[in-house]
Image (cartoon, rainbow, N blue to C red):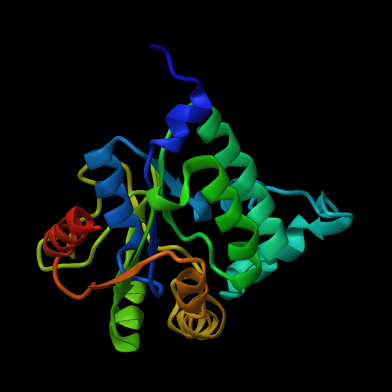
Length: 241
């Protein structure tokens, strides 16, 4: 018996990883994607691809409104969240392509605001089914957020995040692809991180209540231990869901 691509997507997982900047969302999403053969949906990369090299005056129209890419880029560099409808438009477009192929997703960085969630969650329920959507909240302190982000580096080629530790602090090359390790200029500066933390508290954290209203269980995970320990915690919780 053959199954349509739509039926296949209905059987796939959607894992949403929330948390403040530096909580390890990308790292855990990468591990979950590998474990369950899911697509690691990195919202930041999708947004970067559209705004970083955009020309002045270039825009995308969403629901009749023009969103100028250079203005979205300005927000990005100062730590503000991008316009919710602009973000959800790009996210939904990519997810629709993945669902057509019957591919499940693990999301790190989406949704970030209530308007995005109201656009995205009903969309995900329709494509994948409510019971296949799981939400994990990685919890770390503001002090940890500032330390992790101000010490974080990524590789220049594939943008792998390299966590700061005794073993990695003196690395100059990415151990995965050999390219130079660099800091995200502006985005991970201490003052910008404070803005990002404020944005998270005021605009992203309220999503927890929204998810609960949508009958989606939100599982809180201590994000402070090493990534392997955090990952093991997520897997144990996932087995019980």
